[in-house]
Length: 338
Image (cartoon, rainbow, N blue to C red; front, top):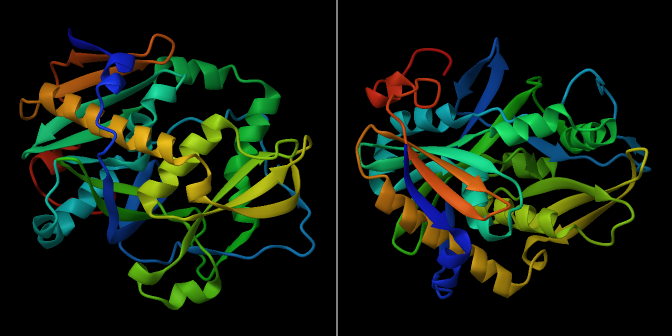
């Protein structure tokens, strides 16, 4: 049942460009490894990897590529943050929040005015906090399943390249590391999580978490002198939400080999005016979500139409355990995997 339809262009015209983003403040971290489709949760730093460039740089990014697999499907890890919340009640009391979500969904809200593809999210208010969950849209699933071999290889190369220029001191292959952050924008307080897999050097691993220097690793086409507009928007948003100021960027050739790696300043990816627009847009969208998602324990679905720039809200009748697990609703820390 549709309960609201919002024109994004109209929303962004009424935004307050003076609003600022305070944060992100690092609150903690978590790691996970997949086992039989479950995510094993832990709060250690063994999954961290550090930069270790080959010399000379001559990297085949398609190592391990499987042409029978379609790469790019979204796998939600949102339950990991919910587990962290239950295990860190004291921290949660010190840093109250209105919204809970991962950096991917916050990025989508932040860049909504410039986004050209469809996407979906669900929202539910539990114990006064609105939890935002990314949902892979039917349009995106279809696009990935039908993507060309070249696009499939490009997606895999972007996923695989970071593993080829980093090392780990542990034997935990396939384990992912996330930071937990608290940010404030306007009147909204956000608890969010984002990937923090890579530190600048092996020496960073010996530092306290608050002092570690993290980097983001990306790739772009070798013929481009700079990232595309979409890349720049996404890279800036995700890095900013994670408190990262450096992008390690690969120049990828047509055959998906890399012979040049350079470092980019996150603050230089997009101009100051666009940064202000993105922050103001996020503030406006959060205002809108807060006005719609009012009932406790009630699911709301939101779908963004990238072509028409419409943000449509629907009311759902039933709770779904695969989005918000029952153990979180009950406030009980689960045993074992999430």
